[in-house]
Amino acid sequence: MPTSPPSHPAEGPAASAVGGSGSAEGPNPSAAVVGGSPAEGQAPSVAVVGGGPAGLMAAEVLGRAGCAVTVYDRMPSPARKLLIAGRGGLNLTHTEGLERFLARYGEARERLGPLIEAFPPADLRAWCEGLGQETFVGSSGRVFPSAFKASPLLRAWLRRLDGLGVRVALRHRWEGWDETGALVFARPDGGRVAVRPDAAILALGGASWPRLGSDGAWTGPLAAQGIPVAPLRPANMGFTVAWSEVMRSRFAGEPLKRIALAFAGQTVRGEAVVTAAGLEGGAVYALSAPLREAVLRGGHAVLSVDLRPDLPAEVLARRLAAPQAKQSASTFLRKAAGLAPVGIALLREAHGPGLPREPAALARAIKAVPLRLTGVAPIERAISTAGGVAFAALDGRLMLRARPGTFAAGEMLDWEAPTGGYLLQASFATGVAAAKGALAWLGGRGEAGPSPS
Ligand SMILES: Cc1cc2nc3c(=O)[nH]c(=O)nc-3n(C[C@H](O)[C@H](O)[C@H](O)COP(=O)(O)OP(=O)(O)OC[C@H]3O[C@@H](n4cnc5c(N)ncnc54)[C@H](O)[C@@H]3O)c2cc1C
Image 1 (cartoon, protein in one colour):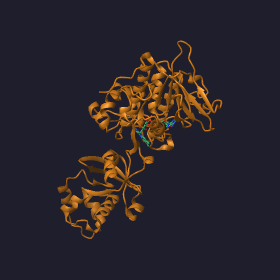
Image 2 (cartoon, helix red, strand yellow):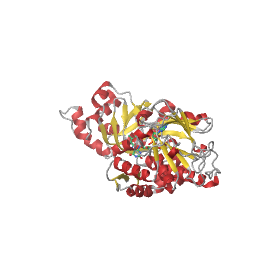
Image 3 (cartoon, protein in one colour):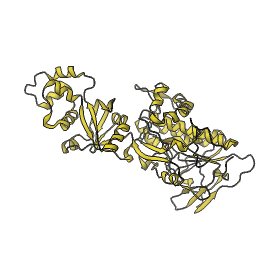
Image 4 (tube, helix red, strand yellow):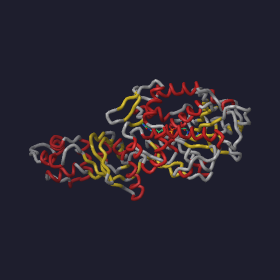
């Protein structure tokens, strides 16, 4: 059975109606404790800490099961990162086969696999459509809501949660546990609220884009409890390049379209964008995990850029064998090799005056521009976060072994994945899993969940 005293957060000073950001501020106890023994048969109380996709999904599962759920979030409104993800169309998940899908999680595949199998991409699409948001499959197999944004989905979801009686306490920053084991929240007015729910779900996100709410400050309280947390690192991020002044001033913001990037035996086709500080964009993100490890290990990594992946080197060499006549070198490269000015600049950046003129050698140079990456872009600009709560700290139901009754979900767990819908799918699926874990635990067993093999 749960060991901490049960409480009624839905009735406590920290509680507020969904969407009622103003009413999140109740009376102002400087250290009020919300808790106490419920009457016989009263719904168990669950605090969900973090109102992103993982936390809200956990809240929905728990609310449907009849729990008294309060979602706490430090921001004035929930799910801000979900809304920003909507700016790119909200890539919810992917339609590729499940084995291939699960392989995207690399080392975390073993632990995430069963959780995603229990709430697979098809279920996520059905859930989205259940909220009145049809989905469609893009040409790459990625799944998006037809509205191609997150706001209608989030609005419908918050309405559903409201209907389930889920409360949302906004502007409540979780600071850790007090000596009695209560969850402690700080409020902007300097007040503190201590809450003792029957169970808690931590869904505090990673540390990228901290202005949206997830700043990774939760690592402190967890580490203080001896809970192993792998250092938070940027994932799906750009890299710094020591560009020349010409490259920086003339080409920052320019896309390198239809290129292929290669590193450590992996090749990815797509697009990248030159920035003042270096290089970012989808194709870079896809290789960002091995590139990051190489840069952190050796101080740099050399990425190979194929500016014409659609043309074999021999075909390109034949085109480059045409007479240059009176054309400038740039015009010749643009016309004969079909390179954009930014591609030509990249080629010159890498080779300087040593750029070969002989057609076969020039073709080889165009198809393998060596680009030296000197650093990793800061986590503040990364799409997602690697590192987090170690799976060894969690049982098979995502319960923290060190804190029975407290579960963890979402990007705060130690996994990473490329863009393509894998981030949201794992966040939603672990939210479902943590909620089900909490329900099983509240169901009276109280013992640790199954140990993952
Ligand atoms: C620009 C951008 C675009 C993206 N696009 C996509 C995409 O198209 N597809 C995709 O799959 N993924 C995408 N992602 C990633 C995806 O949004 C995240 O993986 C996902 O939101 C993680 O969900 P989460 O619930 O674990 O964490 P979060 O969404 O980060 O939510 C955590 C919540 O916890 C709250 N919180 C944090 N600390 C505290 C605290 N101490 N006290 C109280 N509350 C706290 C935060 O305010 C936040 O609301 C994108 C990310 C970015 C930045």
